[in-house]
Image 1 (cartoon, rainbow over the protein chains, first blue to last red):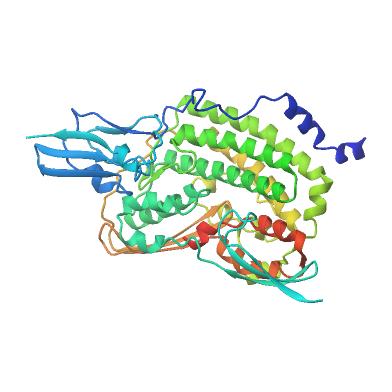
Image 2: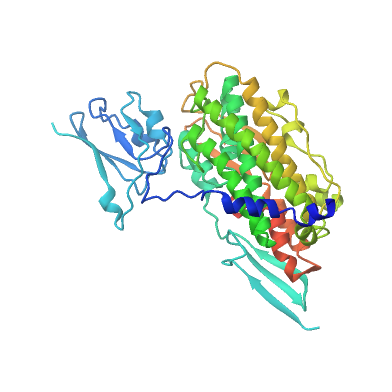
Length: 123
Length: 360
């Protein structure tokens, strides 16, 4: 019996696999459930953002750009193709204006299409 | 018999990462070989000198896709040592928890690759299926499957709530059963034993000569583990066994890594049980005073060494990294001599090379 067990040690695992459900998720045909804290697309609360640029200063991947003419005239942009989704902007923002949502960023053939203007303030 | 030279790599189905080998082959025997490295050199050490300490945490994390957390832990410890700050105990425990989870997922990934190379696809599927449980924990608590961004200078970024702890306990308990099942299979599987026993044994003398570290050294009977020999908190308070094996062959490396996986599961449970309360981060200044620090950690493949020198600005003056794959690569030509051609995948998989770590 011991010899049989040793010779066919994989057999039970193989038989079990016939009855197990597939482990893969049928995304995009079925919804993909992501955990709440998943670092996905960048979102901003425009009321809180003052255009101070702390997020841009600490961004390690150059995913955020700030075009600032004055305190009342600036444009903050996010480049998802450059973004490392590390969450540093969220940590650096003193006002809690910028954060990650748990939504996935759509695929595209042209990275320029993905650029998002997070906040534009004109004086 | 006529000698021929067979080039393998840098792009080859056998290799997960680019590495070029030229093997001298006579009939079915490999007589020796030479290596060429540097195909994934990204200049990370130089790049680190041009970025701030905060930005470097994310750069360092991208050195390796498997042991990313242990790299940032060692880097952050070096910066914290120069700053003279001590992170809160809860942050220390969470860092250690992530390190152990990383070790489990690295060893299961490795076991899958070894099984795939020897033709045991069932074990490959099982090991990688079980690894998903660890990745689920990591994604759920940190927000990323591979790049966790868990560390920051002064602590960790996230705290564990009750829901996280329940998920970790549930998945660890499932892993205990599944890892025991896989271990049972590999210990009794004659095909795996036939392919790994006695293949490319490394003597303890050779291990010392090449300064080998981690599971490869332990599989040759050398009792070294930084978690016990030079512990950072909370490892000095945790009780665990250092797994060693006297044989030094590919089979010994399999058993050491498999048993270490089980030991890490126990460590995760102990960390969760002893997890202290309190904050998970302390405020760290952006500029680091002039000074230097050396920190070491036990990564899944062995000792990771960091040397950091600061000149008082917000960017490092020098960052030197030594990864455990470097001595393993030095020993590789030696291991690839006097083996059969069919054993090349077993030797390569048995070492668990991480070229991205070594090249940086």
